[in-house]
Amino acid sequence: MAARIMNLPKHGLCHLMRTSALARHYAGSTGSASPPQFTTLSVDDKTGIATLTLNRPPANALNAAFMGEIARSIKELEKSKCRGLILTSSSERIFCAGLDLKECYQAEASHLQGIWVALQNLWHTLYSTPLITVALINGHTVAGGGMLALSSEYRIMLPNFKIGINETMVGLAVPMWLIDTYLNVIPNRRVAEWDLTASRIYKSEHALKAGLVDELAASKEQGLERAVAFISSYPKHSLVARAITKRQFREKDLKNFEDNRQHDLEIFLSNIQKPNVQSYLGEYLESLKKKA
Image 1 (tube, rainbow, N blue to C red):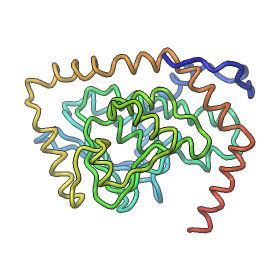
Image 2: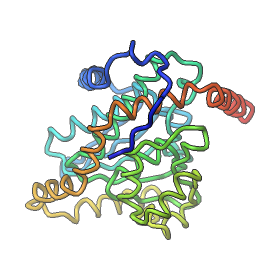
Image 3: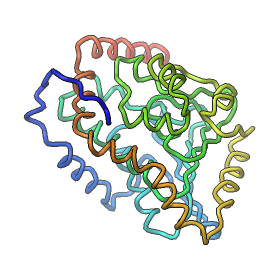
């Protein structure tokens, strides 16, 4: 169980909705019938394999609407006869750049809360899904993008890209549920602690050696073929038993998250609203404008 951090600044938390209520609000909103804006979903009826393509240019930065859309797609696939999900990007350079920091800069506490709860819900949906999940990482992926990749069961990465969890670089603590997710992939706690505290970013080839990804593919087309092969390697008669076994492996992490969901939100709100963190975000966003 995550250790409690005492004496957190309130930042108006007592006036905000409880996390459970807000979580229900976002869960309900993801069930709407509105057409997708930021994703493309295709399902091969012969194989029962779906491909969900992230498409929010230029960097697939995660805002509440985008995260809700991804979560909704996963939930809809769970209701169908789909057996597996491939998560990839329409960009040739970026898989996902993490949270949309523009929406975290000088934002109201209620807006920040909505963003974080949407991220919590997306992680929970992807990490707990009974679907066989593969992340086809065809571009750079950091922070929340790394979360999407690491929450999937199998990771195929293209060469010459980078992956990692770099929250501490912008002054944010890595949430306990993401630490648990990282340890599910990199069980060496000393290495994991170093990676996460130092915001270590791996190049594709080094990520493969470290075990952060499972294989490299020369192209997106080859990656898709290998992703389909991985999902298809599980016979149909094993899918129910396989899903139960997957859930048992991840149950402790999921329970730990539920037990500490509210506290996790409080930590985020406390960190993100600190003047020095907001100042850095402003400088970082300004630097991105100069590069554009």
